[in-house]
Length: 132
Ligand code: SF4
Ligand code: SF4
Image (tube, rainbow, N blue to C red; front, side):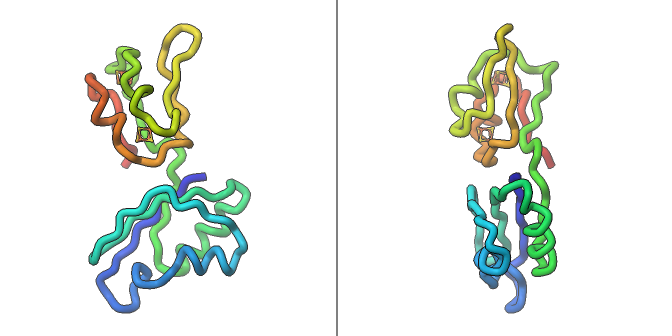
C-alpha cells in the first residue's frame, strides 16, 4: 500500500528534522520502500510503499510522530469522458499503471503509481489528474 507522508521542517522539534522513517523501520521491523521524496528547508513530502498487512501499524506510528499520512489507493484519476484511448500515457508511465483491455480501452492500475506526473503532462485530452 502506498502512503503519502507530509511534514513541516519549520521548527527544531518538527518531524521533518527527525529520521521518522528509519525510526519506524527500526521499531516495527516493517520494510518501507521510499518511492519518491521532495524535501526542502520548509517541508517534506515522501511517498512510501509498505506491505498491506503492516500499513495500519506504520500509519499509526508515523501519526504519533507528527507526520500526516494519506493512503494513496487511486493516486491517478481518469476522466473517462475525456479519454480517447490514444495510449500516450502507456508510453510514458515508468510503472506500467496503464494498459489496454481486449477492446483497446484504457485500464488503470493506480496502486503502482509513484506520482511522477509524466502521464498528466503527456495526455493530449487532460483526462488524467492527481487525486487531491
Ligand atoms: S504519475 Fe507517473 S507513475 Fe503515476 S500513473 Fe502517471 S506516469 Fe505512471
Ligand atoms: S493519454 Fe489521455 S487520452 Fe490518451 S489513453 Fe491516456 S488518458 Fe486516455
